[in-house]
Image (cartoon, rainbow, N blue to C red; front, side, top):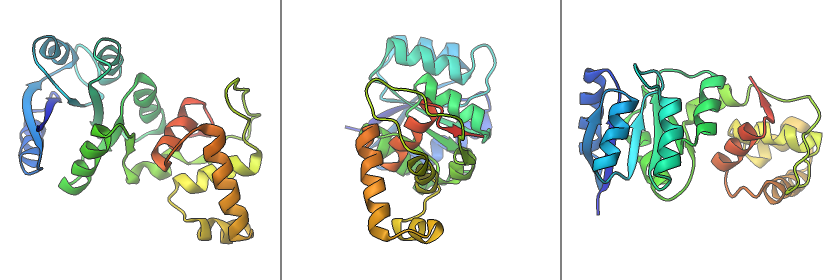
Length: 214
């Protein structure tokens, strides 16, 4: 069955272009359009939707507040932000509100398709173009204490930054003057401590727990 998508954006020209892109993606179908958050919530009250593509800045009810309400009332609906805003604070707020992914508006069909597939499978998707924004630096402040995980060491926090920048274990080892096997061990320990299964989930975890700074 096709993934049912609601586009929420207050710029009709962008909506028309996005609809054309989605029409070219297999197993995806645009079932509605909304000009703001209130219209999106009203549409969800009366229609079946699998994924909401949503802008951040909109009149009446913005994307952050709308996402929070969608996740409260329809937790099974995926929310994929698509915005011109590429600053750390905005991405952080959207993910903390419950968004399942974040794309930039210059995204092409290939990445849009990949993002829709990822969120449909329950994975977090963050545009690769946002990695430098998200991983501007690893916080130097003391690690907060979490009851359910072991604290990451300073070296592990440093490696989290390099992982999210897209560096391979070989590249990280060269950057830090470490053996490849040492980096492999650190990476396994990081995933074990955080409970994350992939890089995107690790980025979201780091943002949620305020391990990164802009």
